[in-house]
Image 1 (cartoon, rainbow, N blue to C red):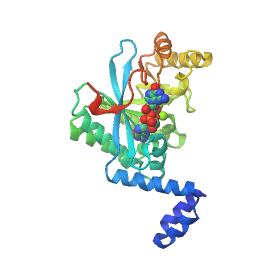
Image 2: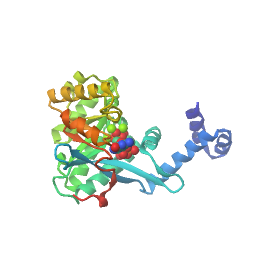
Image 3: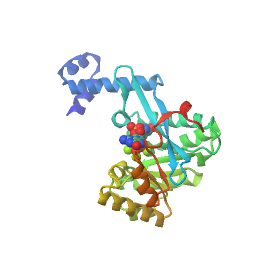
Image 4: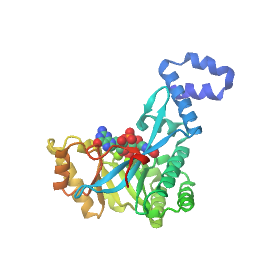
Length: 276
Ligand code: C2E
Ligand code: MG
Ligand code: MG
Ligand code: MG
């Protein structure tokens, strides 16, 4: 209903706009204003990219980085991506946003040592565009980036049955180029561990919700250990998300987890703040 109202407000032109605008509740007005602010921020290239290290748990060194988009709005302050990424998806702006982030990442990689690798989060709607693969290839070429320096983080929701075949073909093609593929937020979707076996992927990231209560929560310990055992059997690398305490780190080390990310090691930060 809200969507219909907004759609009508936009498509029926200027004169009707005010009418619908006044008829909308405050929440709808806020949503419209947020949309407009996001459009403006994107048009003015004001989104930023921050980077959070992925740490090799055994020795504490930085393995690679994850790019996370940041939007600082003059009125709203820092707007979290969990809030504005869905807005960008609904407005049909996500492909533009994704291309913007990828371009910034490639430009940054060109400045960093050649062994640096950056993972970029990709929405399902970006993957379904036929322009995705050529866009990535062109960016790598333009900035002289080796495919192995790029990793794409996708979620299980990218593999919905209606698109699964097309997505699998795309992932295979990307991987054949040498780009790495990770399953993000693993455990929150519906795919079974055994389904992973069929996917052209290199690593999985255990969702933060399973890490949060380690090691006190017995079932979270068991789930984490089971994911690690299965991933190992399939030859997949595992990254634990959201490590905040030494106790979580200790458990994950004992359980044989390779890599981790979290405030215990480093927060996402601007490229200039990282020493690589
Ligand atoms: P994600 O890819 O699962 O990223 C991990 C999120 O956890 C990030 O939130 C990160 O800042 C946060 N985090 C890292 N370590 C810790 C920790 O120790 N404790 C806690 N509490 N949080 C931690 P962020 O940056 O707010 O991003 C949220 C989500 O937005 C991301 O989840 C990703 O799904 C999406 N996102 C971010 N940047 C992009 C982007 O460029 N494109 C797309 N399509 N999605 C993005
Ligand atoms: Mg991610
Ligand atoms: Mg995640
Ligand atoms: Mg997430």
